[in-house]
Amino acid sequence: MNRPTKLSAQQSYPLYTVEATRAIEQLASACLPNHTLMQRAGLAAAQWTLALAPHAQHIWVACGPGNNGGDGFETALMLHRFGKKVSITWTEHAQNAGPPARRQAADASASRLRALAAGLEISGSPPAQFDVAIDALLGLGASLTPERAGTALINQWLQRMHSSGAPVLALDLPSGLDADTGNSGLLLPTGSQTAGQAPALRYTLSFLTLKPGLFTAQGRDLAGQVWLADLAVRVPQEVPPCAWLLGADRVSPLSRQGAAQASHKGSFGDVAVLGGDKGMGGAAVLAACAALHAGAGRVFVALLTNAFESLDMQQPELMFRSPDALDFKRQVLVCGCGGGQAVRAHLPGALSSACKAVLDADALNAIANDRQLQTQLTARHGRGYATVLTPHPLEAARLLQCSVQTVQADRLSAAQALADRFACVVVLKGSGSVIAAAGQKPLINQSGNALLATAGTGDVLAGMVGAALAIGHTAWEAAASAVFSHGRLADTWAQRWPGEILTASALARRAGA
Image (tube, rainbow, N blue to C red):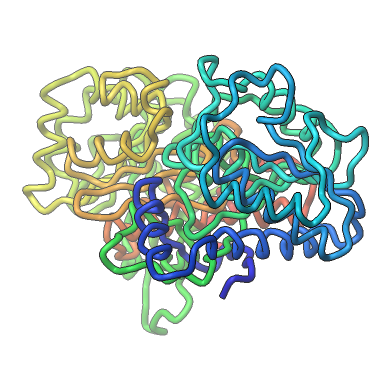
């Protein structure tokens, strides 16, 4: 089906690299008449534009020098036929745009000539007023760099689009976005937006395939709401996806719905939270509270200081113990939340005896600085132990002994490198959290929003992963289910209470919702 479809959080989708997408395009083009795919793309984009902005009268289509520009010309032609006023700008027609392209690709040139033959005119400068802007400037593999001819002009046009207040519709990719990594050389204003929602008035129609860069790093902000037009092309089995966009269909619920009536607290496992050094007791309690509400049968808390004596005990179900009283062989260990330097002394015993463990925050920092602990961590897989690491980018960089910039430059590769190195499941947190494990296609989470950018939400996630392990999920299932559910809670909050801040404690209390 060529008609665009909006992505659903209920469904998981395969993601394809630039190389794979080009292979799919070449295989499809070999079986179709010349120019077919570009015409399908133009029709799909025009239909999509009319669906998103049915009352728009004047549409600006900004076209670049390559095939993405050809998609733009074809879209402009279709919109013209639908009775819309269309203004086309083309980078090769503008003054001071740098040297012209040596030769426009055949399909793109054919679409440009078709648009001209229909009476459309091409300008070198944007219209003064427009109701919708269509970004068809740069496509797959094209980046915005100072060395690229026309970068200054492209930046100028994109800034004009995104500061206009009009909807901006990107064809295939927002211009300058790396389709594989989600990084961009362009810093665009996010515009006015409600917390938890995609940037206002920003949309992307991805052609043929969905690309991982649309859903992680800067991709989510730049792409806005993503739709897919498969151009009536079926992806051949010999071209595998590089990852999956995680939806509800791949998630096991964190709940006791359907459990046997004869169940008791022991049926749902025990979680032991080890952390909470001086001044950070709240981090451990947040993780424990989340584990309790996410369905664990019993939750123990072992703080690394006596801080719990001054805490407001709003969760009397939590059972406080000294670290020495924990039984890691029988309990799922959640270790590191607010652990500070004190957690280091407990890690050798914990890594050697905990059959199921979630390692977060200061536990990861301690492991990053200790080769012996790294060896112990890697050895857990050979003993049949389940381990989930939940680093943010800085913690991941410490573990990989690289910079944060290196991690963020390719989040999929960084997460996979950690998973392979330490033989465990890794959740690389951030915009579009990545879940990786050896022998698995990585997952990019599609739930969640900026409401989670507050202290303590990572501790809540660690507790939710621990509860999923206690209930009986595998490490992979536990990570995927907890990450998706964690993000979905923030999405639900944004819908029900728009504009209200979501605190980590409120998130923890809803962990099983």
